[in-house]
Image (cartoon, rainbow, N blue to C red; front, side, top):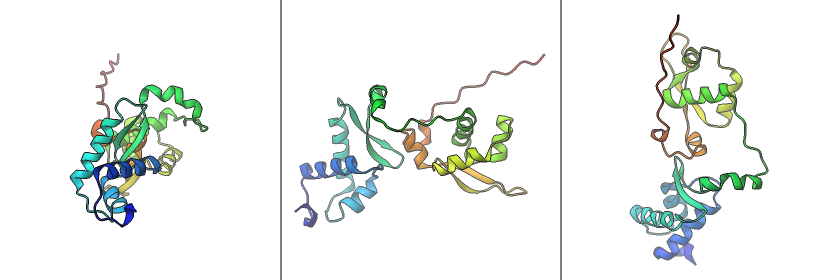
Length: 185
């Protein structure tokens, strides 16, 4: 039985890691794979990384890819199939208001940022419903308080935000386009 061994072949290791990532409902990090899945095995970190690279290569020409997001590795359908696969999803993709997307974008690009700073940039008040929704989705979190009078909460994005948008880090966000200067007459 695999669980009582201290060594494991590459073939067995590959099967085990592939199955674990497939059946897990959240991404698996290298640390989780090593500390939870391979606790009874003597497996080096670079060996796990090599097996994952093999799996990524194996899935290159398939309908799903093994991708790395902020929280770890997961299998996901390739982008070209997303429209065709929507018929299988019982829940509709959530619709986000422009205000919510603007708020989320500002937090992502300017973090850490306060609600007041978001309001200054947007020119309108940020609804408490927006911040509550983003906090409930675990896309943003409070990371402290700004050292100014009133000590407003500072917001930043989370790994869940990165995972949802299939990003492994904030550096993968698209570059911001420069806003043309508005000429006033």
